[in-house]
Length: 142
Figure 1: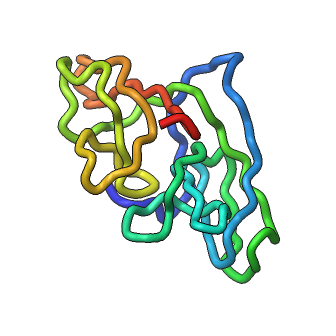
Figure 2: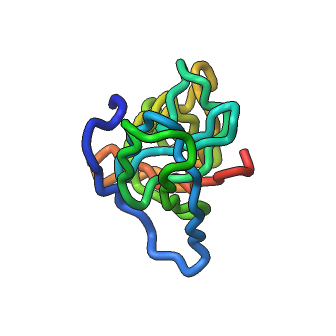
Figure 3: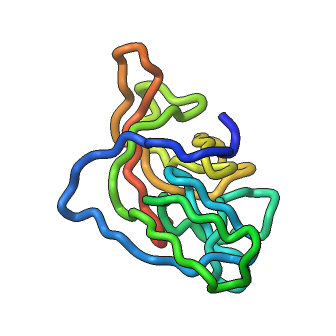
């Protein structure tokens, strides 16, 4: 997979413990719905991208936000945290259950730590042939 260029509907579990948090958006950032969101060195939200200055995973965008012509803190993005999502994880198989899942951009889930920012734990490998795994997101914790 590659970084998002449009809003995406990411399958997720309905969970009463899902938390929604608002993050202040970085100047020039465009965050699509369904994107993994990180913060830069100043603490402003932007799409998670390893080759950038993103240093903390803060959740998955519940809505899209276009701050391409704005300054830091002009807009906020609502992020879902601490829920399980159903996504493709590169290299995952049944033996991967319990493994930390990393992301190399706002839409690429991997098991390799390099390059990657920890985003959650693989809790279920789907064996019905669709190649998807259930990943428990752990924003702010991993």
